[in-house]
Image 1 (cartoon, rainbow, N blue to C red):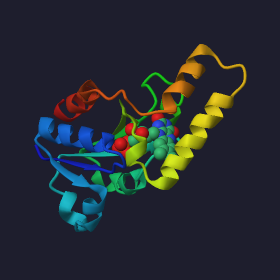
Image 2 (cartoon, rainbow, N blue to C red):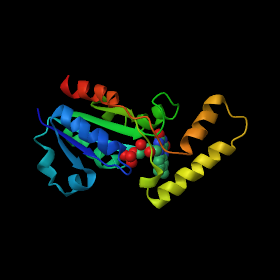
Image 3 (cartoon, rainbow, N blue to C red):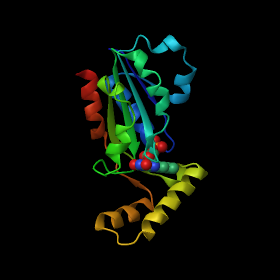
Amino acid sequence: MKTIIVYTSQTGFTEKYAKLLGERLKGEVLTLKEAKKKPKDYFDGADAIIYGGWAMAGKVSGASWFTKRVDNWKGKKLGCFCVGASPIDAPDVGPCMDKVFNDEQKKFAKTFYCQGGLCYAKMSAPSRMAMKAFASMLAKRKNQTEDQKLMAKMVAQDYDISDPKFLDPIVAFVEG
Ligand SMILES: Cc1cc2nc3c(=O)[nH]c(=O)nc-3n(C[C@H](O)[C@H](O)[C@H](O)COP(=O)(O)O)c2cc1C
């Protein structure tokens, strides 16, 4: 069973998950940059290809590289995991995962969500500014529910809600 994991990560959460997944599945782990340099037929021999990207404004970063190719990879195990700062039961997670693949692709490719966190120090300047603006917008929102208040407080600083257990469904999917 040959598995290739391709990922992109800005602050390290997706990278950690991708490398851990690589160890658990004894797969090859490539950054998206490395994957883009590989010849077209490089992925032909793989039985499973998993893509991992971080959530950026409701989308999975870099996922178009994967979604443009999956139609040619039918017959392999195909999965996309998203690493975001939202808890797995947050209302924005479902819609974000739902738009990764089109209806046809959903028949043969699966999505997964892994909780990440926030690390302001490792973000690019534009990312840090966007997250700070988002955090301040949340803090200023009127008539907040307790959950929203908690979220506003959370995103104003660094946190880590990642857990290797979020990889279990991906491992089960590839090995199943
Ligand atoms: C500009 C920007 C937009 C983001 N949008 C989302 C989002 O829509 N949903 C979410 O859960 N997390 C969002 N995040 C948080 C990241 O997805 C989160 O920090 C993730 O763990 C980063 O993964 P990485 O360490 O692999 O870069 C956003 C972060 C930035 C910088």
